[in-house]
Length: 247
Image (cartoon, rainbow, N blue to C red; front, side, top):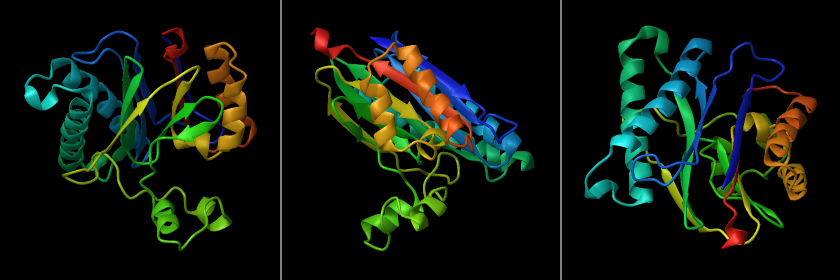
């Protein structure tokens, strides 16, 4: 397994509210762990929300016991629910943090089976011959697309894309989505905040990753392209090559 992660403040923000964690080594019962979080709620609160979520999720997973956390999907969902409660409590106890929250996407890979959890609009893609978005955005525009009231990637879609309908810590309870995918061949995993996807279209992301350059260079190219296209937000990227073609 080869991995690389980085964040960038972008061109128009003074504070980086994106947080990442990546470990190719085991974390608790998981063989590896990768997390991207994009905070919201003002400069101070957004930064704190994402960093708190990432730190506590890793700690919870490391220490989790019991049958309710025995498999990767259950453990990831359990950890997100625990983190949601802690972020919500922190926001309730400190007026500086009121209204804060964070998106969160996390995954683990075991024997080329990807298990991912998602809340918000940070994304996970699987990239092989084509790029496929695995997670589903919890956003107003995605709900409108599903209802047939809006066309994906239209002006109306792009102009309201930042309105999310689900986030960690905003409400006392959260409903995370779980995804499982069998990886095959020379596929890479991309996890990212919307600072990348708002600036770089899926087609362009796929073209960059299909070059199969050095994984660090590929991640840096994605961030550089987001900034060249405007860099309107913080950018977080994790690239994972699970090397399933070697099995």
